[in-house]
Image (cartoon, rainbow, N blue to C red):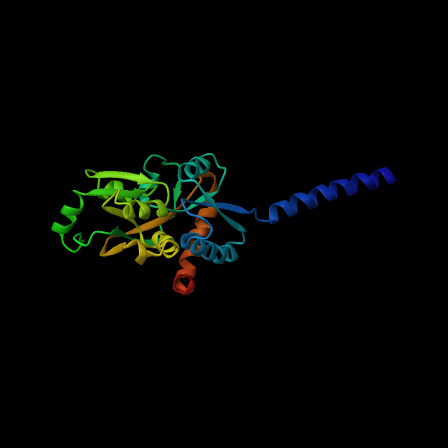
Length: 241
């Protein structure tokens, strides 16, 4: 009798553990490439993901990764998603799932210490393309926009601005959000760096999921749309400095 009771208790415990495992949503890991935890893109992303996490019922951890490693890890399923990439990111990896609703709209600016450079007319842009240009590695916009120019890359926003300061480049092309934290740290006025207006372009940035996360990707997109409609998204971007 005791043996029968133990067998019944064992199978009940196994069933309970299996049911609990199925009911508890697993934690998701998102990567964000080319920034540190102190940078504005990371802080904005963390707050947006917390709101999405509350809606979809999955805890979400955001981690910083080197630019090249991030995509490798996503393709191998070592992370569940990359938070912010441009649409061309999928061009050589069609298996990745792109979220159609943009996670961000980023203005791309030209930064320079030269006072004779402008971005106001098509003629200004044509002159810009004849200069020595530096871009941030992992951002596709400079390569697309300045494909025939003298273009090279740096691994951090800080390095890009220091290249300008040391006159190793005429122009640094980077999005305004990524630039903001670095310029505050470097003291923009002392370096003599100017942001040229208007922006060269405003580019949609999207989240990409690994192929096995198709169902979660749908929930994520719906939650992102909801927090935008509810005004939560705009509030985060307005209040996070």
